[in-house]
Length: 261
View 1 (cartoon, helix red, strand yellow):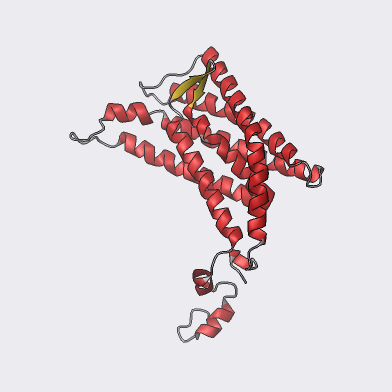
View 2: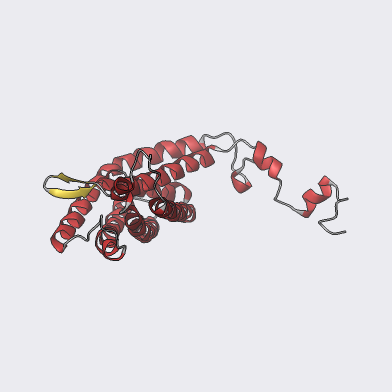
């Protein structure tokens, strides 16, 4: 009898397809570990999306030019460190890859929206939309490449320090991984989004940065990121402590497919 035989009874089908009991998945109460993972992944992707959306606006802080994207982006590194510490390298990398897919989706949607014909009565005219979002594909492209490289580097270095110190000195792996990966990220994203992309996109609303401006933005953003990274170390300790305690106090044991057994 084949698995596709319509006469097969539910019990036989369940035995034929072990581990595929969807009713169990639908009816299960997610464990605390899975709920925390979902929230952390949501914060990570949300911070990544808003970073790309506001990156085109700049401000000056202590004489340094900074992109508004700097406000939310450091959160992504704090989250990947938490994911690496609590869930391990593989699950942290899975969130990094998910963020990359979301970035690709955003790039495609914005590109289509920017090239769609503008209705005459549209409250936002084509020129205004282009000024705001014309740079976004380049920003997203640059951030995608920079973010994917930097986040994977961050996770690898974090795990390296964790193994080297036998799980001790959380501050070392937290800062040691972030300091280097943030430098890689800053150079890549500013160069791709603000120097290379305006040269190739043919958009009159954007123009490439000169070297002095590029240097100032890279230096300013990196210093700002270092300050944020140092500041988030206490947050990393506190969040790790309370999250692990909360997860370990869960009455339901974590089973396969993230479902309590």
